[in-house]
Length: 188
Image 1: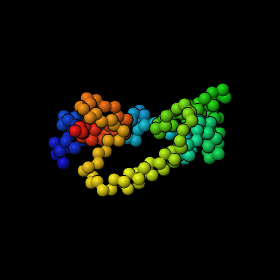
Image 2: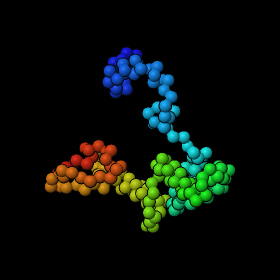
Image 3: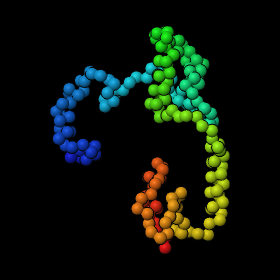
Image 4: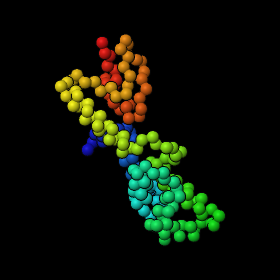
């Protein structure tokens, strides 16, 4: 493959590719800090022996809409990874071992995309909301089956101004990926 094609495929300037090719022996022989996320395998090694098992436990608890604390994670570790826990706590000072374990678990959760939140009371369970949504969808399709797809506007929760189109609208994170044509319809 030519340098031009590789440059276009990787979206990297040709000069950078030529520099990499000139320095390939030094780059491949690199024996420095492996925590740098730019090099493979690189990255910080997991201290915890079974991250997928713990993540599965977290997702299971969250799917059941139960409050999950770091204490629950420690109880799971005691039940499933007791030997690792004993060895980990033995390497720490007595007065800081518990705090160190808490920090380790908080960082593991953060790395895997879980955020710390204040507990609040749900007004409606997620399963009930999904049921209401499916009932509404079935009712909508029954009621408006006579209309073609070109006659139905998908506006979601976006308000429509009938007199003039808005300059800006507010959208949630999921709505920002939708095409602007859906939101910019001006009805006469």
